[in-house]
Image (cartoon, rainbow, N blue to C red; front, side, top):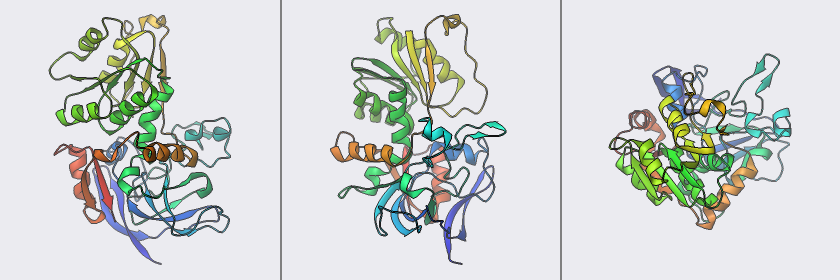
Length: 357
């Protein structure tokens, strides 16, 4: 059986490059040869053991590549075609999909509800930090890359662009809104860009790293707040003349940022949460107005499927957004362990890394 190189989860603290068989595909699947992928913050949660996955699993959920082989029942695609697939790969026919919750496909079981059911790459099946990946339900999930777009231009579409934009969409950002985004890592930066595209007139980005605050301005932030120098809550209330923000987006996954989002909301405002939390959250009585503040709290798992990918590719192709500038470092797959070390320790101003087999 032919072998390929892949980044494999061994145990908490160890993701290593090793060999494993090239995936076999079923009638509805496609085998995609990876041309570019990247490392996500969620992969770091896996590395640290904060999010459990099976030992021996290939990690990664952000594929750009070329169709190598199509399942016997797949129609509408051709071998050699450049494609992306979303980090979330819905089947299209589950109860969750038919209810419109495509991201939660497969979440319901006879044992109860399990979140993130639609996230399979690098979670419940082998992912794409490898030379090849099996894309399940190919006709639901493969989106052709428009001619003229490079891998790095579309690299953010499978996950962080879709996730970040959904923070604004789920938060129902409207024309003229004031929005605060806590944490300007890759997801938060995409949320900043999504708020701008949704019509927000005042966008406030919160972080402490100068390179991230600079990038936030480039992607649409009108104000940036360095929380290492000022109290972010007080500064946001000052910037809004005490009104608070219409939508606060939490893009880090900590109690501190979640609570700060609550404290800067106007009455009736919305907290849109993107964070992956590794411990219980507490809702402070005063910040929540004892439950009487008409607040809305919404959560988001990255929307997937080919129609979502088509829309994001269309935004990139239109020139309305340029996220390839977020790629700050590039590695070969052979050096992915070094890439993990850099990304997990957030050295050298890293935002996103491009991994090429």
